[in-house]
Length: 117
Image 1 (tube, rainbow, N blue to C red):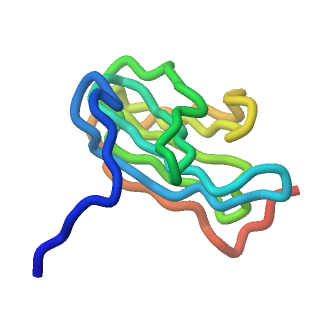
Image 2 (cartoon, rainbow, N blue to C red; image 1 turned 120 degrees about the horizontal axis):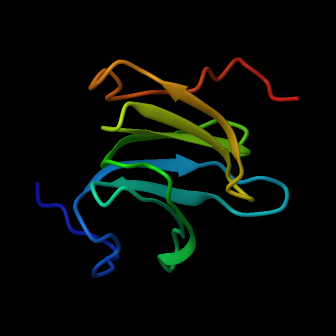
Image 3 (cartoon, rainbow, N blue to C red; image 1 turned 120 degrees about the vertical axis):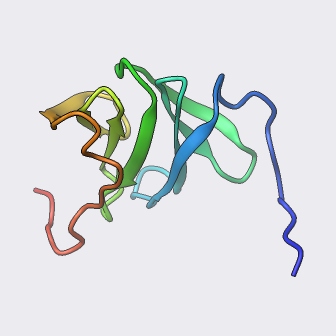
């Protein structure tokens, strides 16, 4: 089987993309594509046209994991800097920052049964 990309964008990140996740649609916006890269950024994209919606900075080393809550309201990124940043998808406001032992967070996922207030 041969796979072909539907769309691509040159220089979407300055370094390799190590993580990607879908952010579910909300009542006020469509679904988004969330990407994390070794360039220390997390980006949110409109998936149909691959238009950059938001560029999130704040990590000191490459981002290795991203996840979105099923509500589409919050998301999180984990980096080689040992921090997990939980943020509001629409405003980019940091909700929480968690510190882990060095090189301990490589994947994460929100519990789909937990409802946000």
